[in-house]
Image (tube, rainbow over all chains, first blue to last red; front, side, top):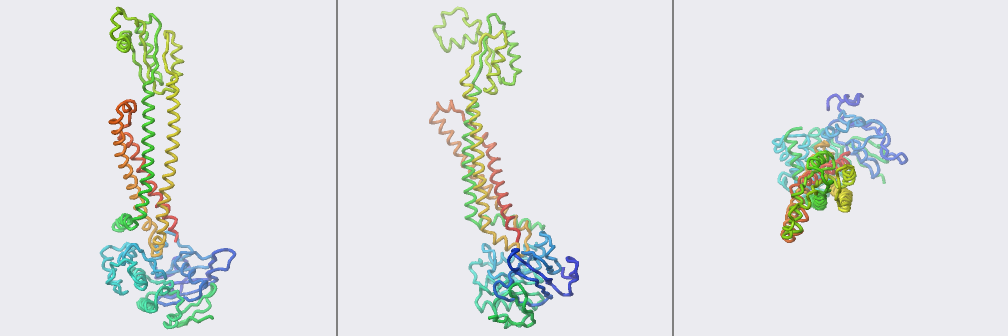
Length: 246
Length: 298
């Protein structure tokens, strides 16, 4: 699907672009102000992008639109050649398998252990049991959790839980990694560890998009920063910083 | 779908029973309690209906004939009556049999004084009905036969049994429908709540690219298993309780046992087992299927 991003929308997508938002507006009600207002955004393969902004700036809505949890009120969204405005419900799972997703609250299956949580993502894409047994320990080693594969989720610290979530997101080798406030529930040490892992993943060619409030991390990492405010992109710069509005 | 993925989803359904112990226990208990109550009422009602039906079968109409009517004529009437839909069985009682029965019942040793059969003209037809409520129509027809002298019938018994039968049919239908509705409501509520609290789990699966089938299958397997276990437990308990109750009545109230016939447990269970399993499995399946669907649109 990565090759020739013209198939689904019928519109020419620039070479190497994995995410395209074309004048996207999202309103939750007809009366209120739109959560996202005429947003246009292009993200290329292999980029590391921070999306920053205060509460209510539209970051979460943007993530939900990229996951096809929401449909735009107007405008067009294309991710990896899938036109998310027109995608059929039955095709959404296949589309999402191209994305790795990490949430602030980890969203792990609490009644399963570390191994089962990570293996679950492989089960979904119908990987054989033999391959799962090979892949899971390998990815757990990447996130430094090789020794904890049998642990229950509630036996892990916040940082460890986020690393399990990261392992789950990466096991199917996604083209895009979407992280919604991945350090929101972590202390500074764990936050840096997670961001370090994400940078490593990005270096291997995965496009990484991180929605965050964490100024220190954004300013230190010198990546592309898209700043949102009240549903619009107010700034988009390479090696940008998270400017304190106040 | 790969065969190992298919078995994985089925296996997850079984594992879920253990992962969600309290939900599993609550659901099985609710299904079990509802179906036990249903089975109990079902058994009682069926036995009452059986009793009324047995009593009905004993109700007969006796037809006596004019003097001089020959046995052939009476047997011709019998053949004619046997064709009627109300009639289940007709016994021809010849005068000798009638006199023997009378002697044995009422005269005993005093019967020796009789040299001739005083009931020589008392040959009769004893008619048993398919349905006592049809007694009136049959009697009207028999009255129109010219060789008939007298018809003995118990109108009160027939009317009472007929009324009781109708009442039982309505009452049992009403009770069973109410119990079924209450069972369906309680069981589906338990299943719905049990799954609703796990909607996060469904969301996670959907976010990481699980198909609707992949998410739903373990829940449906779980629902069906809960339905089967929840149905079998009350059936087993009731089997034991029913057998013990019959045994108790037979040993403690021997007189009552001869008046009150009980349906054999096999006969009750030939209907109760499929009904209970259908309710248990049906609600387990439908409840999980529809509840998961509500949370799939993520």
